Image 1 (spheres, rainbow, N blue to C red):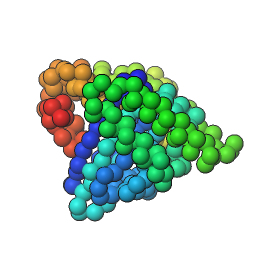
Image 2 (cartoon, rainbow, N blue to C red):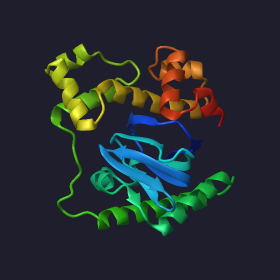
Image 3 (spheres, rainbow, N blue to C red):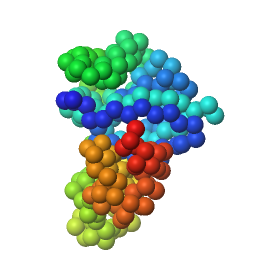
Image 4 (tube, one colour):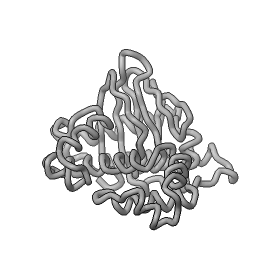
Length: 251
């Protein structure tokens, strides 16, 4: 569906998401339990009737707030649904105590489950995008611009994004960017909250998800997404998502 990258429903008790990023907006509601997460190295929580929005390119993690775990429903939205100019506001205010927005997100999930309701789903997504944009803009001022990464860190991120599948060595990156390897790693980690190798792994897992949903087999996905072999894919995929690639594709 236009504007929607992926739909993800899950329930976890013990799994904890490591710090990672997405290229999409992550819009989630919690059906039971509660989640604790760090976004841009600030502590937050998600529970009850609240709606949580995690912006693209900003590191976040996640874990259950209680031993009972949590159940969640997630929509991954195309970056254009909201726009990069709202990333800064979403970092500052990732949670909305807005019952109307919560209802609209629930209704969109229901529409996506019913064959033949594509027009309803597209209409509801449009309303959700407009509601979120209004809420974010109402909570920001002219002094709240988007937060661009530092020059060196941003250039390294662009380089990693250009080599998700084939990868790039730290020595090669340092030579290309004319920086000492240690300074390069420190600059990236300071700017994005995670080291370059973990950022790249997260991007590869994200690509693997797309390929699995497109119908490719895990063995094919492993090499297509930049992993050494299927065992390497399974290990990293399970670490990030709490399920194996095969189970994810079947679900």
